[in-house]
Image 1 (cartoon, rainbow, N blue to C red):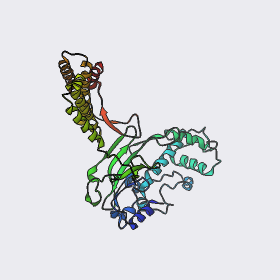
Image 2: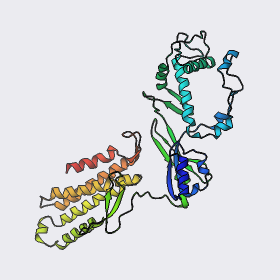
Image 3: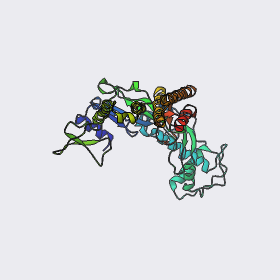
Amino acid sequence: MTAEALIESAIQLNFTNKVWIADEEWSLNKNLPKIKGIRNIGTVIGISEQAVKDDFIYSSRRDTYCETASQNIHCNQVFNRSSLSAEDVVAADPSFNFPVYTAVYAIAHALHNALQCGSGRCNDNITVFPHMIRFHMLIKYYLNNTTKRSNGHLDFLYPHQVLAELKKSNFTLLNESIRLDENGDPNYGSYSVVFWNHSGDAEEIGFYTFYPSVHFFINNSKIQWYANVEVPTSVCSLECPVGFSKKQDANDKKCCFDCEICPNGTYRIPTGASTVRTQNSLQQEVHHATCGRWRSAGGPMCFLILVCLSLCSISVFFCFGEPTTSSCILRFLPFLLFYTVCLACFVMRSFQIGQWLVITVAFGIQALLLLMGYSLAPLKPFNETIWYPDKIILGCDLDLKATSGPVLFLLSL
């Protein structure tokens, strides 16, 4: 099914308020954004390769590329034999103009290198093997129009030699570094993030580059979500109602599930049951606070251990969302600080004198080390692109100056 058929079916079936992700094959389609009813399907966001500007297509040279009349048989760079005008070319679907534009340049560079051309001349000792007429004519056309050659003899230049040079492509085109790997696959690239605005045009709202380094940017203010609402939420499956349990689909993603009714004689433990059990345990501790057995086990120190373990978990809540300087600091500070107190309680449990003094000193030393470390080298957001070159991992840049002292002190306990 083509993208046109899919979108037209969605309009006919009244699919509304959805977010559509368009790939590079139809994100720049000039007809789809102007179909009647396209606004009803929702918001369309897509990616596209770099587009060739119209100025290049409209540009022309008055001077002929053909130096002699005999070259006119192969020379058509003045477009006198083409039935298409520049306007026809510009009006075409621009989704693949840059790949085609790049491919033509790559082949030209490969021919230039295979024929050892330079300073307006090619190597006269290299000959062409004409077992493929089209390839032979391409070589001859290239020589006649780009170089001056004293010997026009063509024989024994194999296509696989040009292919080998093609895999070594390394040149700059439209401020883009064009490189191919050993398999001939592109080792370069930049994509534009586009949004179908209300005018029926694909408006660029961001970009993504992955060579030589990964950069990703989206201007959220340019996106007009359907019905002028805020960013919609993406929920694969709604929470199951009371009396139903989650059934994981083996062929589906882990975040998606089906709801099935609980069998007779069974019940589903709600998500908040763990919170109830925690509160119940805390009430039991408070109720038996005066018990001799509880006091012999540590008494108030047990409360301190439980409280510190609970405060350590605060760090988890700062691991969600896009990291900031504050969230990076709070990802580690509560854990390092309160876990130090927890370990100090276990270490000092065997001592009967000066327990609280040692715990207080350990807390103060760790707090001082954390304050000094974060003052010298505060943690900052960091985009990880080394371990996964095709992904951008948002994290925090850990500096040894900020973490070595607190971590070593924690390990010493």
